[in-house]
Length: 171
Image (cartoon, rainbow, N blue to C red; front, side, top):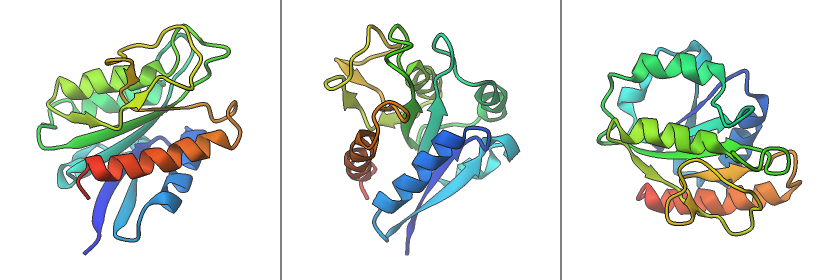
């Protein structure tokens, strides 16, 4: 029997969806990634998953996109106590070095308040930035991806992170 992991993105976030397609390539055949489009979800389907991956861009001065702001209230009464959540965020350290991939911190804080266990921490090594919201012991609380900056390097980081989260999900 395959293990299913819900992957939450927005259909409006084309680059976060491209990352999901690449992430699927790195998953073993024993794992299925089920896409959840937050634009067309009330969040009720999340109750059947123990493992979640959330893909979000960081906008402007360290904000989450409005579609995440609109989705989160639909799941704010759910318990995440038995869930492990991995987060990746698209960001741009060159143009936004003062809030690089802040969406990771915003989502992780929101989820931790509801009992989620955040996994997939990534060391800040190999990233050049000034600050980022909610670093933990010199680690990001998820995977920062500079999709348009890193070239093919983001794929290598994603491949390594996928192996890491599979272990942390205990799969």
